[in-house]
Length: 98
Image 1: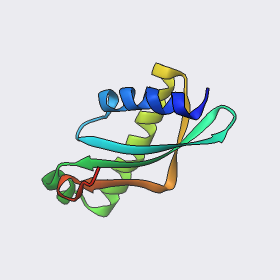
Image 2: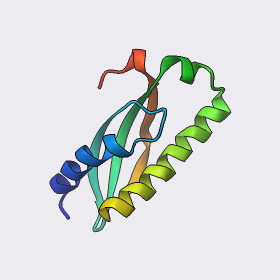
Image 3: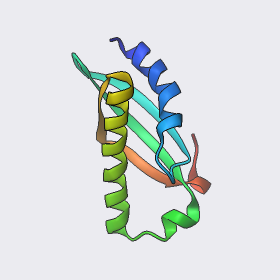
Image 4: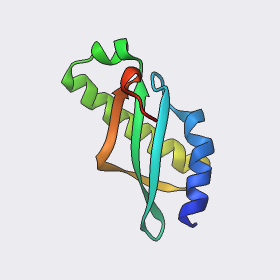
């Protein structure tokens, strides 16, 4: 599958499968292996919700988001994705620039 087709599929799929409390997503797709794509992503969450988490719970939530979305993307579309470790973030809605 080519990068443009994957990007089109993910534009339609991601907003539908975002786990709560994620509000929005902006992403960029990179073809990283023959059957694998890397996502550079930024997600937004409600300000108050994010402010109530400590750093350990923020890290745990970020990991959970990656695992859930990888699984859902694979099961719904058959596309294998990895989230880029250095280009994956969650921001408060008030800081959203998507």
